Length: 319
Image (cartoon, rainbow, N blue to C red):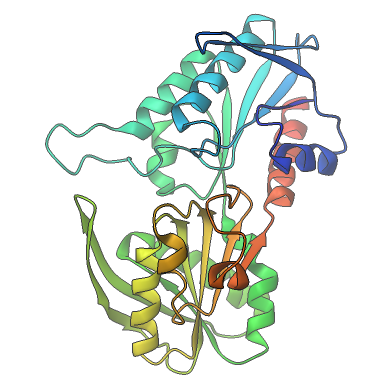
């Protein structure tokens, strides 16, 4: 097994390699004066099962497009030099939200990214909490592995369950399946009933509407409000406010990917959100180093989940 880290400053890949008990494989990356790059492995990949780790979020130094291009180039180099299989390990998948056409002549960004990666020679992809799992799986023709983020929040849920009844809520209709799966897992984990709720929300042309109607029982409960990502924070803030009005004791906002763009730090400072939990799929570099959001923020590592997925994939490949 070869594991490459295309974002050396991010500790995710190194921690993953350490968990798998393998060294990070070295590679060279040269940046030319005009901005073009050359990436090449510094070990012979012939016949190897190679894993390339790169989260495709924007920043702090590169755009998603820069990262996609670098990933394509490196996958191509590995295949050109005989790698038996190349798997992209992508904690955050850019363009996963653009998985359907909602306006005339809309693009399908997720499908295009899938086609690019597959054309470069990628044989498999592992991602964390895709925006829409069915759309993600259908966009790719190669095997996919989808890691559900709610497993990383198990200790948090266990802690909160000792303080009274809990509920899982989706901040919009599109996330209902994600929230229901966590509810089912929690009922098995805790051996007790877990309530469920859904909030009405619509988005068109970037404008949010709705967000006041709560369907479900949240009275006097701690509500785990689960979403795939937090961008500007409006969805979570609206959802938390609606849940509190519906009688929730407190709301803990949980998301796989914390992008925290725009005014997220101000939006999520609201007392309606008592705690905030995200994973380490995206570094929280956009948040201020101190303040109300930092005070309530908790980071749950998904490295063990990815190590389990990569280990299982490699074991199956060796058979």
